Image (cartoon, rainbow, N blue to C red; front, side, top):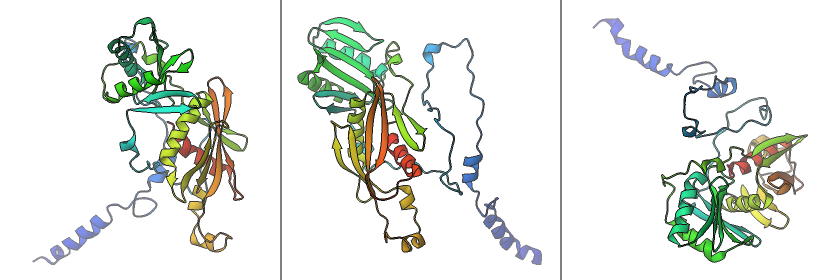
Length: 322
């Protein structure tokens, strides 16, 4: 056998082993791609298109501030993990309440819910005295039925009121009615699609502090945030919901910041705290107008809580409301 051929398996093995080599080491560092990524020109649709057939399927909110890396070295952020079993536990229709007010959250956009609300009134024999699809309101002889965009994308809020007060029996009937439906309902009202507003919550920097600006009134925001925190803040020594106050519109949580989670063993040894610890933080909602709410994170412990910690926590909490 030719002696040169004897070395072919070794050459092939070396070629395979080094095939993944790239800049910054043996493997391609995707963090560099993430940091150096640039935007491209938006897709332009023809002017002859029918504008009623096209909407933003996955709208991306505008950034409220410039990008800020948390330190000298940048690492691409990982997706936030969902609470265990959360996707399976969420129902198509859920109840929300604060004080004496109560309503339903349906897991579909208002354009899909509106025809179902009309069908509910018809099948229940309610006499419709006025109908306004642009506002999502059905006036009937017994109560006022309404649907509007929910806080989270793809959700709708459905109410049944009489004289400004929720009608318990009506809400129970609607909860059973929508519970029998599914999120795969295909019928949709083009007239009611305008109810799904594009404005969403935004993370903003105000001085040295970070806040979340939410385009919703404070009571509806508190009810939704309360529900989501009860589902997600259930991890002992990491993130826990300790207390909530609907009158003060705030929550007391226990949370381990990313700064604390990233402490290395040497930092822990030369620190008064010999182990990683969570701290108490108060999430406070403040009304900024009829349909404007501001969410703040205030330190309720003696441990340090930097603006970077504040931003990291508010990013996680606001993610529960998107």
